[in-house]
Image (tube, rainbow, N blue to C red; front, side):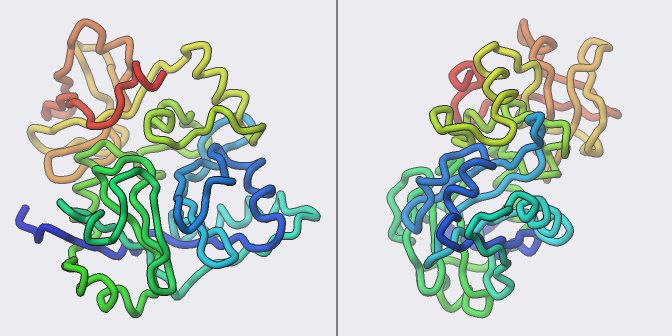
Length: 302
């Protein structure tokens, strides 16, 4: 793939929910998987909003701009669903829920991206930029950075820093190559649990914070060693199997395909089926091979 060293892409499938008001941190702290007190213009976090039973509903990045926390989440109908769910818990909290229609979510990547943006090479570290904010991906620094910027001025702000415009598909290739899950492309609403989606290895859960919705199952899964499946990056020889396709090993189902891009993919793998080194799986004539990740292993994460 021939791309400039530094690239940026506006992500049109993302949207922004804003949470302002005096109670904004306390309100979100009791609802999401990460520590909201850490979120600021200088620090972004990745977190999830779960069902009371601990199953996945939404994931998002959180950072502060001015007096409001901004939640970078899936857009369209998914954003509307997330907003409605949050509003149900508002009760008497002093918060203001809104959206930021004139701001864009931007992915930035390439060798030297952190330096060009004036950021340390540390997960989640951020700073104010123009009327928005830019921060290193809180999941993994190898994924580059993300920004929230005025839509009409993205090129004006970033191109003088050495970034050239790329496409959302270019960024998706980077994401898939690193094995980073993307919302409903890789997770199943009201079914996936956080450790299956590697939130523990990718800084998406704070194990020391107080109670939040769905915490009991998440904690029990970790401390009792109940993780039976994990999302893992794979390479694909042949035509990429559609999402949901069973992956077979020695005639038995060993996993399920999720998102893919240009010979790379993410699959949900049954851990008991890959013990003993069985790494090549078959699916509809394609060979799907597990590959190493650049983030901590599931053994370290557990």
